[in-house]
Each structure stands twice: as C-alpha cells, then as structure tokens.
Image (cartoon, rainbow, N blue to C red; front, top):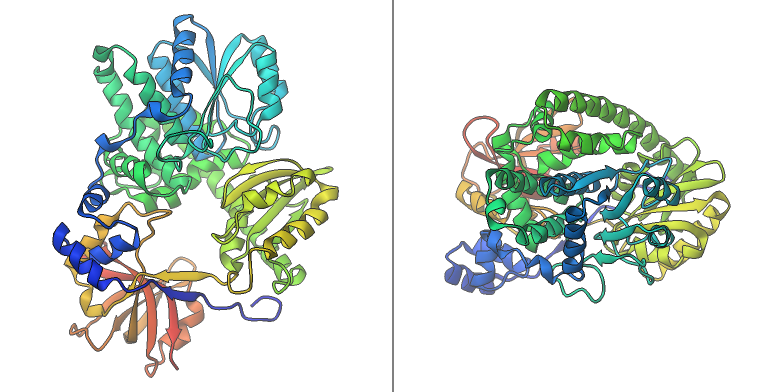
Length: 587
C-alpha cells in the first residue's frame, strides 16, 4: 500500500494468437507447435532462423574487423607491444568492467606486452577517466591507455591524455553523446556510423572482439598453442558471466557467448573462477544464468560497491587457487556487508516513497540522502523501480554534490531524459534502462521537477502499471515433461529472450499450501485444472507471495495463474514445476 492506496495489479497482455503460422513453422522445422509459437513471438520465423537460434554456433560470430576503428586499434596495440611501450587498461568497477580488464590485460601479457591496469575508486574518482590519475600514469611512463566498458563520455579527460602524449583507445558499449572524445580511435558498436551488425554487446563483448582481432594477426602456430587455447576457453566463460550480469539482450552474439561460455565454465581452469564457484556452492556441471545473476554476480560486484574496486581483477588474474580463495573470502564478507547496507537503504527509501512521493503526480521517483552509500543505491533503485513501476533516481549526497544511480522501465529512456537535463548535471552516462550521474545538491529539486515534466510527455497512467506479457493460454495437460524440455531449448534466457509466461484458467489448489524459505515468505502448492488427469496435479512455487496465502487455502477459490514452467530435478526424478508470476482470483 502506497499513499493510502493499494498498488495497481499488473496488467496481463496476451500476445496475438499465431497458431496457424506456428503449425506451418513447426512442420517445416520439425519442432512442436508450442515451441514454434514461442519462436514466432521472438521474430524467429523461418527454418534457418530456428536452426541458428536453437543451436547457436561459435562460427556464426561476426567478423571483429567490421567494427569501426578495430584495425586501427589492433595496429596501435601491436606497435606498443613491439616497441615495449607501457600499456594501461582502464576499466570500470562492475563485473563487466573488471571482467573486460582482466581479459585484455592477460591477453596482452600473453603477447609479451608490458601491461598494467587501473580500476577507479567509485567514491574517490567516480566513473570514467580522471585527469589527475592520467597525469600520474604519464609520469610513470604509460604511453597507451585502452579503456574497457568506459571512456565514451570522458571528453575532457581523454583530450588531456592526448595533449600530454598518451594515446587513448576507447573500447566501450555505452551510448555516445553528441560529441565524441578526441581519442586515438574508438571501438564501440553503438557509434552511429559503425557498420557492425550487432550493437548490443556488453563491454566485455567489445573487449573480447578486440582480443579476437588481435589473435587473428599473430602467428598461427602461437594462436593454436595450448596456452592460447586455454586462454580462450576461460575467456568465453568470463564473457558469459559479464554478459549475463550486465543484462544486455540475450540475442545474436550474446546468445552465442553465453551458450558456449556456460559450457566452458563447466571445465574452467581459471583459479579465480573455480574459487568463486566453490564459495557460491555451485556445481560446475550445473551452472546456469540464474547462478551467475544471483550468486556469482553480486559477490563479484561487492568490492566495487564498497571501496575495494580491484578485488575482481585481482581474483581473475590470480594464478594461485589458494590466493584466489583468500580473495573470494573477502568478497563474501563484502557482499554480506553490502546486503546489510542495502536492507537499511531499501527500508528508508520505501518509507520515503510512502511519505514524500505522490505516485499520482510523479512519473519518476527522485530521492536523495546524505545517509545512503553511493555504491549500493543502484541496487536499491532497481528494487524501487520494480516495486512501483516508476523510473527511479536515487542520489547519495556528500558535501555540495551527489552521486546518483538511475533505473528505468521499458516505456522511458532514462539516458535520453538525463540528456535533456545535462545543464543541471556535472556528468552523466549510461543507456536506456540504467544511468549514473553527478549533480550539485542545489540542482536536485530542479532535476526532479524537469525530468518529471519530460517523463509525462511520453508516459501515462496505463504505462505506469507493471505488465506481464503472456505468450499464450495453455491447459495444464499440455505441460508434459517433453514439452517443457523442448521449451528449455530457448535457453539461455535473458533480456530480449525472457522465460515464456503462460496462463492457465480455472485452476484450483490440491491439498494445503506449504510456507517455505528462510524468511517464510514463499509458498509451494499443487494445482489442477479440469484438463489435468493427474490426481496430484502440478507443483507450483510462488516467491514473495504470503499476501495471497489466505486466498490460496480457500477451497472455493478458482483462479487464473500466470507462470513460467521449468523442469525441477531437486527432488530426484525430473518433474514439471510452475514458477508463479501472478494470480487473478475469481472469488
């Protein structure tokens, strides 16, 4: 309940029926009509596209040299290696940035280059390059800086580096502003004039393409050596991790990276990744995107959020398993600390939304506090965005300035919104769904008013309702083990390829629902509809759903459920299980 009102329920939007087209595609592709229907909803509408989507092929990666300035970047790096120049890789403090940094540093060292790295302090330096630090590296003999997952917004800093004699190669995946940095070259598929066919790579994807391009120019015998083959096996696993955690669309090359990266993680020899998998209690043979997003990712990010930014790179570059275990133990401690801080900020922010924000008037939630940790507010902004289905900007104030994190919904491009407020900001950067900013405290109220005015130009009350996009209505009888196994061929799931959501109608509960979870906030139960011959029904689980427990135990209640089916092997034999997304009760 917010502002005395119960929040609006999510709107269920059922995608248009495509049964006749699905039957044709199913026959020509030798798949079920159910899977064909799901593929059509993802614009996979020919047998060739079906083959490429369901069976990703590493050979279908695009030519790295299609990316603008790639050859120029490769030639400059090779020159630096040959001349024994000192190279610095400048990364970011999140999983994408630290993964990109470690990969490029390790590969340049494999090529016998003199390479070090810099991960900026989130609190002390902020995002991107810093003139003072750049000058220090110049004094220490750095001749070439290569940015990864950053740089496209550092206009003045990169000009300064060039002015004092340091060449800068930018590799980035963030949206560029109207003005581009005057760098030696820019490798970024989001450049307007870049012909690369896939512009949704994570920063690690761009860095990997640079590494791939470099590899294509070296001696073939060296490229096929055991050392290099092991590097690329481990690299694909790391690319998969960062691609998943950075929540880029799980399509095209990203799908290939994740599919093959998960396979290589099963046998990774990287001491850091092995230690991380151990502390997360993940069986290497069973690792999936959920493990990465909810267990590996938060631990890898923890150091960067709480002032130990170099932990991630130290872990991934470690050659010793025992040393790596010590690092992940620190990460585990930092992650627990982060969780404690997060709980406090979430509670405070939720209370402030209820007492200070009129959700009838506010299209965007903008809140600021001197008590909030700048490294954690991004996670909290995500929580608020999901809870209230409003773009959210949270700002941590320190002195006269504040550092902010913005998160958004599909209906509003928060980067473009901030761009129209850039006269109020010290700096900002990001993309459609997430952005970071720095602002003078005196401008926060003006930002709140202006960005709300801008938002209402494209948003309305209906768009500010959370939505569930339903693939189709099915009966529970259709959810056979073989059908659900076939749906799993759509994996890996992620942004742009979410797990399919179905509706089943006239459902009833069999037996008594069971409350589970450490905090006793999840419910498991069995459901049945009139088409389901199984006397026991199908097991379902509803996370964070104690608010509907009383309705579930009412035996007279028939209801509709929206859910994603999956195969659960936790109890031994594989069984179909429904992960509930929402309920519509009829009584």
